[in-house]
Image (cartoon, rainbow, N blue to C red; front, top):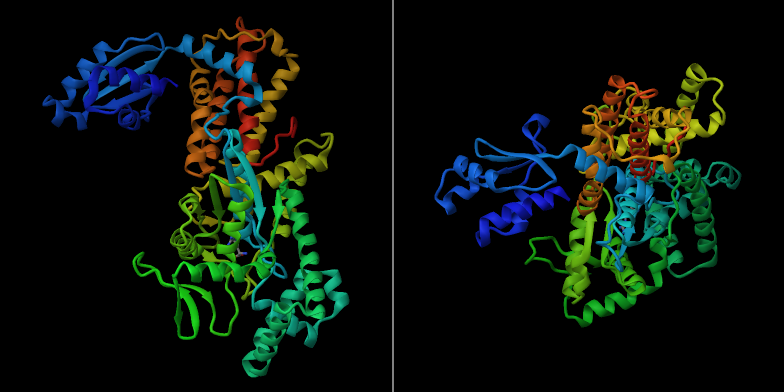
Length: 560
Ligand code: ARG
């Protein structure tokens, strides 16, 4: 808010030559607090105003006057503004007290719908780290969208279709053991699938069998369908265990196979639009003008593709939800695929295709290397989560053995640690997987944030703080940094959503917790002459910390 106000003041002084949006974009938050809270650099004004930046800054600084600032001064070519502590403190505390957990909400998304494609694992295969990333990033973005006022529709687009299922069916008829599959479906199905791959190197006839089974599946052969359904249901049951741990639910679980009988319509439509071309027996949409390889719509053997299904499902999503934005939270290795889909839809004449966005993310690495299923190097997600929970449990036994509800807290801490480790990284970067790093209390982890939260709430509990007794008048230099951060929460939410980047919230929460811990180390609260005001401040801080973590999908135990 003060950033807007600052921009407004500067803009009044500069007149029409520079837009207020531009001015707003220029405003920085100085690295050092002693330099001010907001800073406007004057360097790029010099040419237009024919004056040197330093004297422009002096001129502007002397004319800005508002109760929200305690001081505005020129330093070099910068106009640096200092916020008025008592004004901002009382205003901020009041806002959080009034809004509670709703603090930070926006209405920029009011009346608008965002569709999110997230998680989307493949059946009969292990739930990979990539799918974990998609799930937790997607979930956080959906929470941010809701906080910004959007309605969200979360879709789990299960990978339940494609030629690999022909191979799996063939493999099942060779080596499938129903009992074993029943017991541990994903492991067993992966095993026979890999076996099929190995064997087909010696025996090319197998590939043909795979093809035939896929054909049967496409023709709705009852035997093929029945097995496919079984594999699918069994896989989904396994995935549900993970979703339950992560506390995530979907509005729609609709996989690729759903579009099986809807693709002919799409292909006909593409043809009618005159953009479908024959190429070596296959059908493609050329994207030469866009500088991309052609999008394969139908292979030469007549089967449809991953792209055909995505084009069909995109249309279905628009027809069903009339979305304002449609996001695909999928690893960056699929960037080309999503570019092609978007261009084909645009060529088909769908103007809403402009609002389709691929939200890519980096890979999860183990010792700097990609994890791969083939070499048995994948880390099984369920095991990771379980290990994190066990580790948290041991920690509790060690440090706080009398804690009530130990198992529940261990789950909240363990799962929170895994989620936060993922979300604190800029989503486009690769993430090094490290269980030890995730779980420490020191450093930038969820347990550190949860611990800070628990510590703060315990102060309130011990002091029997009652929000009805709250007061918004606090004069305290140690709390000031945290208050300014609390003040920025709404801006951080909006910024994180606009960039589809939950890591901005994650890093913000770390700053907030650090500022609180510094304050706490320097302040005696109980018996302080401003005790009620300190408690009020701590209460608002816990509110923001809790809400921020919950946006990331992380719970906050009161004690740990
Ligand atoms: N099942 C795919 C995979 O694991 C991801 C699907 C992403 N969503 C989509 N609409 N293509 O690679």
